[in-house]
Image 1: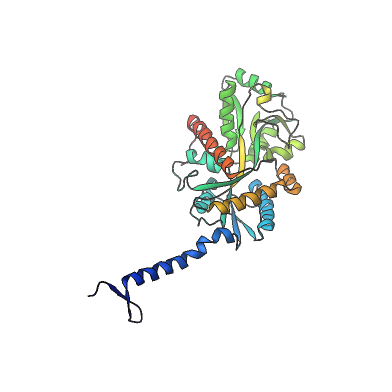
Image 2: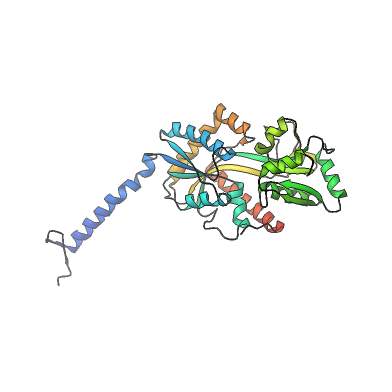
Length: 338
């Protein structure tokens, strides 16, 4: 057999060099759509995955942001809800999606900083498998007591906890939640003991605090905000470095004797690792433009959040630091979900 030639589909023989050149040309032609993809992006609808049900805080933020990104990039942004497993189903779905910018996720602290330590085994790596696009907003936790509670300030809560032999009962929406772990952080900072009372969600916990059956609760601001405004809950402190725009009259934990205390929930957009940098840049610019709009800021504020924005790199730096912080807290607390 002649090893210097190759037979074509029509039976003609081509020199090996010509065959190689023809193959290279074919491969280049096939790769061309992918090579120019970043320049053409977006040329079709973008899926924005929400790790939760419709109507929740993340869903509300996703839809208002998605509408503005759609207008900016001139392509539909289709919000798709994927609830379950503490958000892990949605995060895993995006981790395994094509890294082309057409599937992104809105994630939060629990998904990317807490779940990796809370769950024994996850099918994704929250740091390695994702490229941060932009941090959209952040929302602190708020410590609340019932309207008839004798506790007026954070100092009152700390004093009661120190005087209680078994620790002051603290309600949260569940084991391993940001609220639970914020409580773990605070009891260490204040040198006190809480008896953690985990509920299956925020609603029953709020009901028991309002009814005086549990003295204190740590909650996300959006969850507790309506009952605070209705006068059924008294807020005593927020857990961020600065006051929440949604609760401007409520002092921070730091202002009340624990400087630097910072714990809460962030919300951000992320894409699968391998997404072209040019695509990340376009999404970052569109999202930053969106959160500067008054109607978007007002919507986020109504949900108890505070607009952030910024670069992809800044978000990546924050995410790694947040991951390290909560990993330590989860391990020290002993919280685990199998």
